[in-house]
Image (cartoon, rainbow, N blue to C red; front, side, top):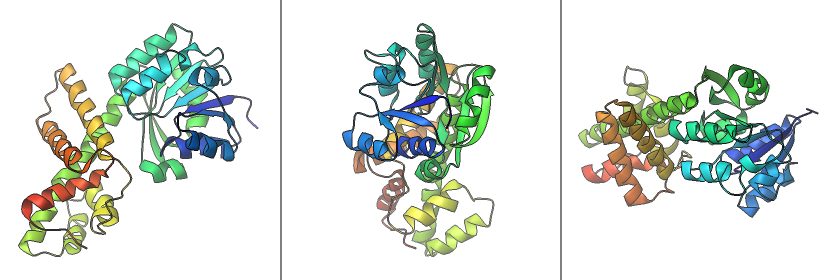
Length: 297
């Protein structure tokens, strides 16, 4: 059994499996979530429940956070009764996609209470969280990274981006923009093929054997679009949030994102039409409706 006590706040679709992997690895894990059912499920796997983020940070040495939006992350970490007010934790790791400006704010706020902020957003979806095959992007002081490395490896493959707060968040936003862009453009291309009379499965096979292959054609179309299930596992609202964050950060840096703005608009349409809880593969349904055809494999 490891000597450190680990804390985990946010036991949703990603945080639940990730906290479970820490328990399975033999760590003593203290957990908190505002959702009682999620908290009960984690306790059932062997974790111990805390009564608040502050209580958790008073019982754990290292705290991990996996939450849906930057506002929630900031409130849970720096707000009243938040992690920063806990007496024991010295390292706080944000696994969320919260953006580089939030990462900097957290690092500065946590430093005031003698804690080190680490941004370590992950990519790879629910299956990656469950199986320990996530890409984990990390930025923090090198010494802190070396402390965290054996624990973070439980989640997947590590990519150290440097010491500056927000570098890992920037990498994650770049990834999520490209993932959404691939889905948007692939949807347009496949709908065009279907309207011309090509079997969509044949077209996807052609693309995946050719230079047009991408993460959407290789994974999302076969699993969630050709099957008409639209259940890849990533919410439209979260994808829209991530792409908006990316565009905002790029503009703040003076980096033009013309194509990125179009992707953001397509997500805005999908979000408005199907709702934030819909799967982001619903983007394909928007293009289908405009073209008057359906992609059926």
